[in-house]
Length: 328
Image 1 (spheres, one colour):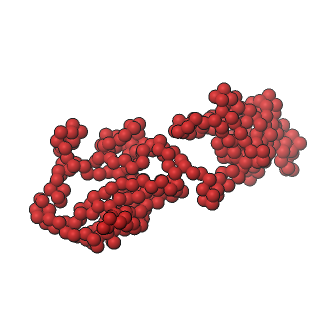
Image 2: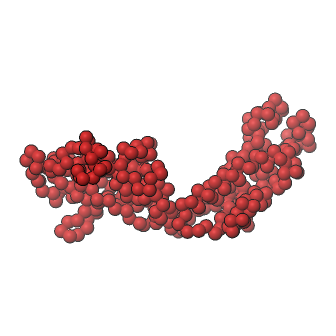
């Protein structure tokens, strides 16, 4: 758990130093920096005051608890200031534990605030009854987050992660009059170029929530497109949608439309595949059309989403790149 960026700054409160000689933005920033680097790390008891030592020509103002170039802070006020950080760490841990595939036995506390003994003891009160070992580095752990990111890129130290949402795409599925869900949506039926009845708004999952995802794990999804000409193959696109609702297996987008969002759009390079296509005749009006079958290959475990396109040509798998455009 990262305790580096807790954003605990008591001097942002207007009742602390407002109206004093120390209330200028520059002085507040200076005192806050000293508090962050020294006082915060040294706090250890609720019933003992903490001091922020700063050098200034205005070294004494008892009205604002400033004496001998030190600002005095009541211990209970400092503790109250840190309690939200404790709760945020506990909430973050519980969120991770809920989606973990294996029991959690150890928690590592990193970041600048991890060096504080009060914080460590306070968290021990929560983790020890759970039988969880709380650890922290011997030296200051402020660079742990940055160094962890470098480790990911260089050494692939982080080998897998858990999907926190379900990802998939919207498809048009063939209409089945025996299916009750299809019957409820029969007013949305349409005829595709082949002459088949289809209904829209079917959600086809690619990655389910809770799935463990490694860096090199390829997720595949088959797609079928119909176009009127070979050049139109270049207009094919696949929208990757994210479902963040409570259903374990979402099937229809119109059930919880607000729980779905389009995260990105994949534009496959089908120029090579299009050269292997042959025209077909529509069962609807005998017009010509082209049917394109391919798979989109997605790697979710990389720092950024990666995608490719795959198809079979004379029994051999062929691949081409795909570009990704993210929704803002």
